[in-house]
Length: 358
Image (cartoon, rainbow, N blue to C red; front, side, top):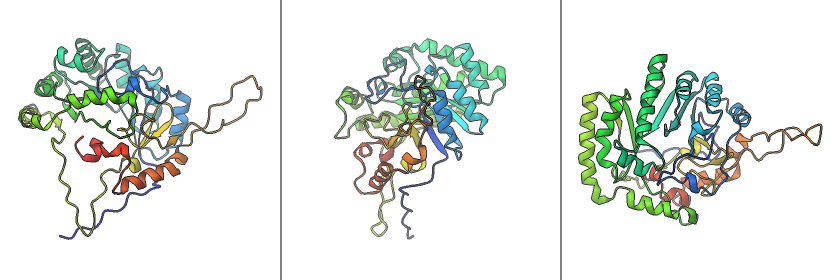
């Protein structure tokens, strides 16, 4: 069969129908594989008014993920953001470590219009979970999961809840018991993502090197793959018996099969089909970059004030966002052009999404 060459990635595409916006750039935990507490860019808290202005510039938006590196429930108006987007017909999702869930927040989860909630659980025992999610209490998180599911039941809410696990050597054997724990709490889906050391770009800021070293020792190695295959087989069988939806990552990278005449297809279209904004307004190439000191396409909040105040003593109105301008700007176009080439940007070369193993 003759394969036609895939259409090239557009360097200045239309604004996408999916966006990921970080409400707040800080977290209450210190997970060992996460850069949030060492980030070298501005740690922002996106004002609600700026969020609303950004949303107004994305009329085509259909799906919105309200979370970045930070824990979204730290933002005092997080649920107001959810409600605003939901009223505009946008499907809103988020991730949470669930440590901050109160009775009131559980009710807001099921009444604000939130469509999907992913709960980070990297273990089925306190010893393993707390060694990864530093600062969290496993027992508290499990209690909060019960509180969330009880609120959903009481409200007869359609909120979709799933677990998310970052898979590494330390917690590999906890995958089957985690499926059971989630199932017993009324959660019937788990997304498993491999810990991958994406922090290997040549120009990596020095502050991230300790995290890189941790990831290098914690991620699965070729020597672990046989055991991982056995655990995956057990997990698949358990999920089938429980009618549980299980999403497992690849254990090895897909084998490229480029055709000499057509060339290899693009490996990643995130920067052309999805939009990511940090709480400080930086548009990043994708979610995997995570912080603007690694790569940025520009800041959407760096425009001029919308209107000068009548009284010089009064503060100027917040800058009007320029989402479309940054999305189609020279830096964004240059990044997409490089991604299409045989020499992608340095930040992409070690990325698990780019390699197909996330």
